[in-house]
Amino acid sequence: MEHQWIDLTVETVESEHLCCAIADKKHQAGVQSKKQWLKQRFEEGHVFRKLDARGKVLIEYAPLETAWVPIEGDNYVYIYCLWVAGSFKGQGLAKELLESCIADVKAKHKAGVCVLSSKKKKPYLSDAKFFKRFGFEVADTAPNDFELLALSFDGSMPRFVSTAKAFEIGEKDLTIYYGMQCPFLINSVEQVRSYCETNAIPLRLVAIDSLEKAKALPFVPANYAVFQNGKFVTHQLLNENLFKKKLGL
Image 1 (cartoon, helix red, strand yellow):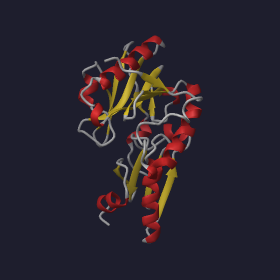
Image 2 (cartoon, rainbow, N blue to C red):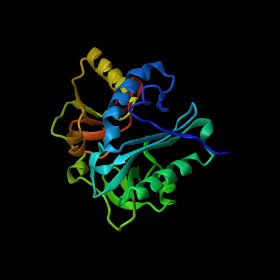
Image 3 (tube, one colour):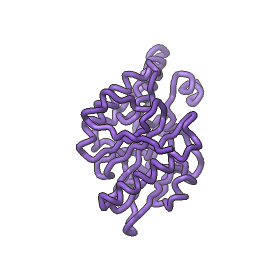
C-alpha cells in the first residue's frame, strides 16, 4: 500500500489537524498556539510531515540553527518529533518517515541530522534503538541519561550547548519552563498553575518563547522542565495528579 503524505504550509496549517491532539477539546488552545508558532517557522525551513489520515503519524524537523533546542552544530537538521501511534503501528510508517527526512536532508546538502534520545526509555523521547538501526550514533551526552544522536554525512557532529548540561537553576521556588512546540503544554501548565494557586504554593512559570531563550536553557529537554529547590525534577508533562505524585504533595 502506498502511503500519502502531507507537508503542512502557511496556507494549509489552519485547515489540517496536527495529529497529536486531534479531537481532545481540552488541548485545542494548545493546538491553536502550535499552529501560530508553525506559521512563523515554515519560512525558516521547518517541516511538519504527516500521514493523510486521521491519526498520530508525523515527523517534524528543522534546521538546527533555528531549532528551539540548546544544541549547536554546523549545517545540521534537528528532529523534534517522530510519532506513530495506535492502529498505525507495525506498518513501517516510522521507517518511511525517517527515510524521507534523511533523503530531504541529503538533498539540501546538510551535514547531518540529529535527535534527542536517552540511554533508558523516557517519555516523549525517540527510541535510541530505532535510530541506531539507521546509523545514528551518540554525538553527545548530558546528565539524567539524555543523549544526542546524530547521523553525520561529513564526519562532523552536533553537541549540547555547554550551559544545557547544568540541570540546575538559582531560583529555589518551584519552577516550570515550558515551550511553544507541543500542543499539550498549555493544558498541562494550566492544571499545575491552578493547583498551586488553590493551595498557596509559590510557582514560577518561565515561557520559552524565543529562539534565544531556547538556545540558552540550563537543561536539555527544551519543551518542558520542572525544577524544585533549584534541582531538575522531570521533563514529563504533568497534569494535576502527576504533579502531586512527582513532588510528593
